[in-house]
Length: 219
Image (cartoon, rainbow, N blue to C red; front, side, top):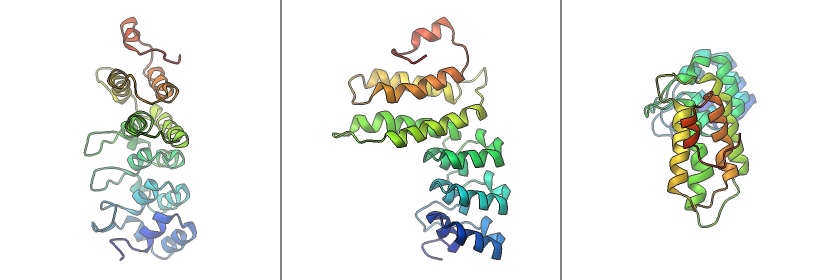
């Protein structure tokens, strides 16, 4: 072990597909072996590491070797899908959903689903971080990837009619940020596209709901 990682953990971290394939062929049980807590990651499985770092081909090899790991949780009760959503890896998200669609509704230690994790990071990357920086950064690709991640998760994360689900919470968060940061250096074209996606995914809004929406709102 090196800093809590065995050979498979390290190969997953760096996306070495051929090494991962060879290790799993020799010892399939490695797919279910957790890292040690002294690593930079929390105690987790190889699939958490590969999902976090966006290595979709590695994730598929791990799913083939141990399909049950798609629903495994780390020290923070996060599934591989939570981590892929957090770091905006759409290709990984798609593979994980194909393997275990029920994980889309799993909650982590903060009671957040993968969709909520993606939406929270969209707000951070697209709104909060630009508002705090003296010099704006070009995060267009990262923001677009986060939006794609959230859109993939939306159909798998239905909002109960009697509950304020993740889509509604995102809508409320956007409206709150709009009020708290009216002069912030974010571009409304960054903020509102996913907001509009969430409104559409929630279904028809009442006249009272529409009155609450900030303008301009696409759609």
